[in-house]
Image (cartoon, rainbow, N blue to C red; front, side):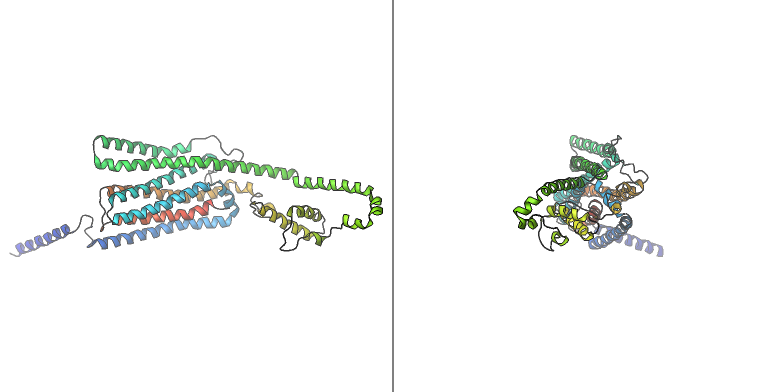
Length: 435
């Protein structure tokens, strides 16, 4: 009797539990009571995960700060090998992808399934364009030997040595995936598998976006890098000319020679000048004093003429004040012409030009590129992870899984994607805009 009652009670509880599971929607996990509880729990878990990601990247940012404070001239010199235009394009692409991702979250809340799928596909296209541009940047630097410490082999005398086609190696996996997606799209269209065709079609355009980024990178990268190489070569040539002899100094000596010749000619007619116009002697040959050539503070003067006079006066060993004023006038003249100056001091050992050979040594430049590849490479891995999750969201949005009560996965992935974009916003100025 007791056994039968116990069995009846167990069956009743099982039936209640079975009925309770049937009351749950398909999207609600069995250990949650309401969709709100499930959404809040998932969002808390995502925020905890993002905190660990911030701590992970914080370690690399700390390493960056330490090495840059240790060797600032290395970071300034090596940063000139990074293409600012491509970095700015990638920044704009990721910012636009954040906008489309946030819009996709809103569209999923409103049960706009087609718009959600289109916005997620757009976000995927932006991610692939980003990777295409990075593929061109990486391959170009690998070909030049701008590698991490231990592998650094850059030679300024031969900046483009013969080697493998690194860009082709990077693109090979994407070529295989694109061909596979295309065959899947053709097969699903031939077999009239409607849902599979709906999934394969946007994914095919996503794959093509990678090659759009590659094309964009190849158009911009060679022009900028070659220009930098030629500029470096011109800088070395100018330095060699200055080492052999300063052309400005030669021009000044030539001007002084002409002045002495003119003075000799005038000396022949000294007596005639005194007899004809003794009052004009003082006005024709004024005595140049130190105070008469130094311009007053706040006045606008012709710096080209002042520089010539100041150089002559500065050649006198006792005129230290004139030399200081000459340095100030030269800096003012260079700034007015739009030139970029680093350190206007007599000691060139602390300048970029003076330490260029030391900057490009393997033990120093290799440190910069080690940090560069570490930070941008880990960021690219996060982009790849985000692409995988976004493809999963695209398929589910085409399946119309999201509604007003269940849009958590889109929101969670959106948070992750915004963090990835935010990290790049910090990486771009810290790496590309060191000038």
